[in-house]
Amino acid sequence: MSSKQGEVEKDELLRQLHATQTQLERERRRGCDLEALLGDIVETIGDPVVAFDSDDRLLICNPAFRKTFPIACATLDRDTTFETLFRRAVEAGEIVPTSSDDEVLAGSTPGSDCQEAWIAQCLKMHRSYGGILTQKMGDGRWLRWRERCHMSGNRVGVATDISALKEAQTLIVNQTEHDPLTGLLNRTVLLDRLQMQIDQHRRAGGTGALVLLDLVKFKEVNDQLGHAAGDEYLVEVARRLKAILRFGDDILRLGGDEFALILSAVQDRDTLESVLKRVRTTLGERLELRSHVLRPAVAMGVCLFPEHGADAADLMKFADNALYLARQQGGERLCFFNANLRDGLQRRGNLVEALRAALEQGQIGVALQPQFSIADGRHAGFEALARWTHEGYEVPPTDFIPVAEEIGLIVQLGQIVLEKSLAILRGMLDAGLAPGVVAVNAAAAQLKHPYFADMVTRLLNEYDIPPYMLEVEITENVLLDRSSVQVEWCLHSLKELGVAIALDDFGTGHASLSHLKRVPVDRLKIDRSFVSGIGQRPEDEVIVRTVVSLAHSLGKTVVAEGVESEEHRVFLCDLGCDVGQGYLISQPLRGTDAHLYLASVGATAQGAVV
Ligand code: C2E
Ligand code: CA
Ligand code: CA
Image 1 (tube, rainbow, N blue to C red):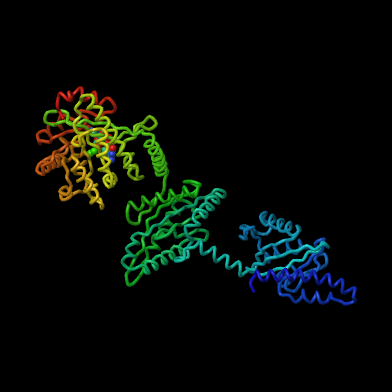
Image 2 (image 1 turned 90 degrees about the vertical axis):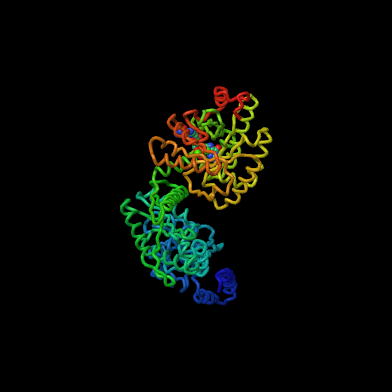
């Protein structure tokens, strides 16, 4: 019998009882004793039935009721009230206190405030007009009581066993909260569980830890032994984790090969480290799978609460960051979150927001650093470098360019730098100056953008700049990119257009000569780190010499970066290096400084340097 059907029948029973009572009156008048019949019905019915008078004293209860509450019903008389019965049942553990959403109340030891409040609430409900009350029984069953108040003031209560319904409900909740493969809790409950633990530790004191685990080389197990073996591997990892942890700790599978542990009441850092060591050694025990011997290994990122934060989402970010670092260090590393990491994250977060705003508000500027002919010192051109002044401070491009690349704003930033550079160039030409070739830096994402060459063409036309006055600087690593076909295609288009191409930071990347052959590069830029070794480190001098001769033998010109001293210049001049750039001649120049520079070195149209 379904519980719903049961309740309908209970209703019907109540109705019948009521009707029978009324009829009884009538029948009594007719001299017929139906009281015995009514008693029979109540005695026979298998579900608990109980009735109280208007003073809440017990009128009747049937055998099913007495069987359900044997201790509470041990002594019954006319003075037994609902309240005495109820309290006795709770104290005897025949009824278990629950919250409104049917959760068993935590800490409900007899006499606790929590339990008393719950009893008061139940009594109030009973004294109201009646209604429905769900009760958890000491033996695990669930009863749903329907109470009805008769005009006379008498109350009748009939109970239905809804354990089956409850079981089904629990099953459904379980399914949505658990990972079907390992049976562990899943990601949906992570933040709730974590917040609960954080709050508890904040109230009661002590430290807890959130540990994120990432299996090392799980993908290889999956790829080489198949998905079924991969599943077995995960199940075994889950089993080992369960075996290590204590009651009160949570283990979750977040998806794929990522797990989380929420460890409660960690005494101190040493204890925590020894727990994590145990996790590592237990997981790493021999595991035989499809006749392969494996030893599961994990990278771990750890943060502590409430020490590192009291917000579950924040802590998740922190632990994730620590895990990221652990993964970067390779293998089975363990990384603790710390204040430096948090500050770094915070700074980066602030930087990201500020950079977005700076781009929107056009606050990214350009500085031009002069390039000169090494042989005679004459002006040759400029390199355009992005500049950002944020809250009165110059943010170094080495800080914001990588961020712009990561968050996908480099295409927009590169375009701004290009457009501003061309605008300055136009201004210089209009002023009768001879700026020479202007080199702009282009990141991989820009070169992969399908309309990069079109955009360059459009801007050159817009500012009426001949293409030979523009150079695009790319780094070696751009050529190593997997989608280098797109990059090559883009570089060839630029070349056709008449734009020059320079390979920046040459010697620091991993590009080979074969890469160099594939792309139409006009110039090589020797990295500053080698130039600075001139006169100091013979091995750097060898590199500089080799790059110059390599470039020349390939028919390319060479630009030396970071030329800071006359000694550098003389050395480079002796090698026949073509162009130099560095503090020896000038720092990068902003605004009208570049105009003044050109005028001061005599780079005018009449001087015909271009
Ligand atoms: P880079 O392309 O190698 O630029 C040369 C860097 O060396 C510049 O630093 C310049 O100021 C610095 N420098 C020039 N001469 C000397 C010298 O004699 N001594 C020393 N110690 N340094 C010198 P900056 O402006 O800080 O730029 C750093 C890097 O940021 C650039 O290195 C480039 O990789 C990147 N960057 C700058 N602007 C842009 C841009 O618009 N787009 C892209 N994608 N990257 C840019
Ligand atoms: Ca550059
Ligand atoms: Ca460079």
